Length: 263
Ligand code: ADP
Ligand code: MG
Image (tube, rainbow, N blue to C red; front, side, top):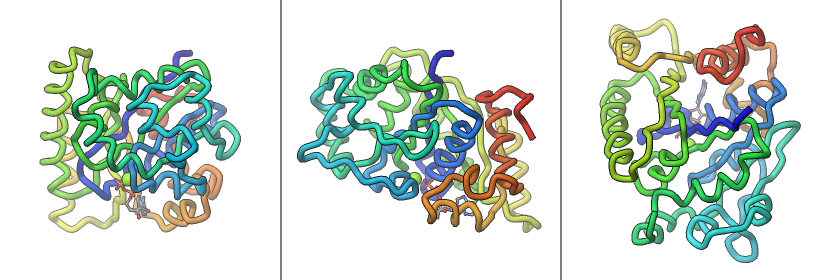
């Protein structure tokens, strides 16, 4: 099986990109898939959630350094940390903050992440890249590398506006970087809090009427945040909870896992 290459992207903040990367990744790992998560956000929320150390630009290879200077396969491997069985991460580092500025004038600036992550293709079944809430050159790199995009959203009117912008950006980038545009796996609606107000019902219905399929619906649950505070994925923390099942449903509906492993 070829490694799946997914960017989890939405320039809107707080829509659960990092949470989806963590718990979807954990779900795939629990299903026996070797899964690599990549923290492409200098904030390092995914790195913190997994309770692994940031990479240190002085003395260690980092993703930003690898993208700017190039790296060998061994150097690429040296960035990978193991969290638990089948679950791996390339942690964040502070130099990700200056990456967009430093990358801006580089040649083939959108292809740098592809050069790095292709060195690790053989070793994983799935790779999920947790993007920063921005549509800049680092995000362009994720989109250039990715063959699929999964879009976390929340039930908020700005989610719909953000999506139009996002889809436009993907098209522009594909033309400019001369790449095949990644396909959309679809939307994951997060932090669903029922019963809905009339307003939220309207937004929820509108999300279902977009041309992208809804592949996941994740309710607001304290266990989701608790698992993260304990450095665990929901598959490890509360494998029998309804929300763990919903992440498994997402993994099936979005096409990562076959139907038969669904609960
Ligand atoms: P993003 O990466 O898009 O900025 P996060 O994944 O950091 O968003 O999520 C924003 C906040 O919402 C975090 O504090 C996270 O713990 C919380 N959160 C996300 N999904 C859920 C959920 N299903 N239930 C409860 N809290 C959630
Ligand atoms: Mg995040």
